[in-house]
Image 1 (cartoon, rainbow, N blue to C red):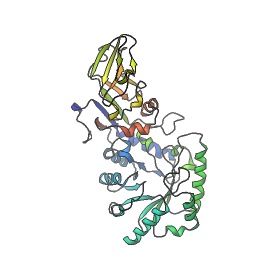
Image 2: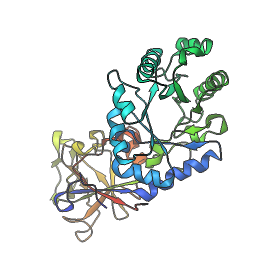
Image 3: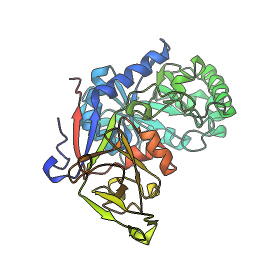
Image 4: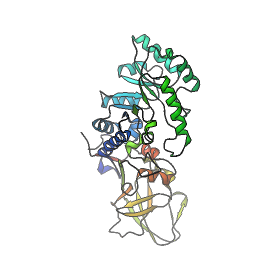
Amino acid sequence: MSDGRSVPEHLAGARLTIDLAALAANYRTVVRQLDGHGTAAAVVKADAYGVGIAAAAPALWAAGAREFFVAHPGEALALRAVLPDAAIYVLNGALPGAEDEYRAHRLIPALNSLGDVVRWRDYCARSGGALPAALHLDTGMCRLGLDRKETAKVLADPGLLKGLDITLVMSHLASADEKDSPQNADQAARFRDIRARLSMGRASFANSSGAFRGPDYRYDLARPGVALYGVNPTPWTTNPMAQVVRLQAKILQVRDVDLGETVGYGASHRIGGPSRIATLPVGYADGYLRALSDRAKAFIGDREVALVGRVSMDLITLDVSGLSEAECHAGTWVDLIGPHQDVDALAARAGTIGYEILTSLGRRYHRVYAGATT
């Protein structure tokens, strides 16, 4: 199937294929990894990490996910329209003035400070009864969540939570994808201590990488995100996840160039001898990052070719000198992300992480959703 928001195939120069069966398989892989220690929600913030929430969320539901996490309330409303029966948590909390929307659409805020606790508790009182919420405790991220002083106040006086329906007590790992970081054990010890003294609701601690770190991190509900979309949650070893996205572009033009000529803006690549240069209709406006200039690789069939010159807004250029005209011509498909180069590999060439590659994928692609599970 295709996404109704995507560019029609005959009008697009590039194609983004999202494998929904692989997405569902990745969810099931995380559940198996938990080995009976609770279950897994699915994080679908940022339009399901760029792959499209309208298609991804139903595929995850069909795979067994019943609880979902987003960042913003606007994302939650989009998700509710797709999954009317899901439990939806909003990580950024109940924004002031938005409480009625949360109640009307059965959204569950993460309470990230004592101020959030008081405001949601007061709203519950005005609304006639306790409404569900997650209590987010910071154990080392120093971002959202009750800090050490606020956590100490709640532990000393649990009555501060009276009038709330705390369905989840959660924290977030800061370094779970770093195999030997001592911060992981430090956070696990802090959360274990808090959980022993604050036992309402269920506990949630593991993110994508945390789900692969062992029983000390698993608790009742894991919150995998980027791993569902194919990024390696265990970068110190082989990726256990199936690849979800494939990005292909169609060559617009191939030209012969000679010694001394330069390619692209700033003349960053100078030709050292007779060469063939292929131009593709993808650029940084499509999420193909400018940092990939003169660094990226692509594949035509099984043949690796180098990106030369700068990535511009709409175009990239490849050195295809080693391929014949029959192998490489206008209309030939080129893999930018695919069987020979996954999201993590492309991210490494750009000096970034798979998250950024996925969430930067643009809206000018023809999007194809394959392997539907419903």
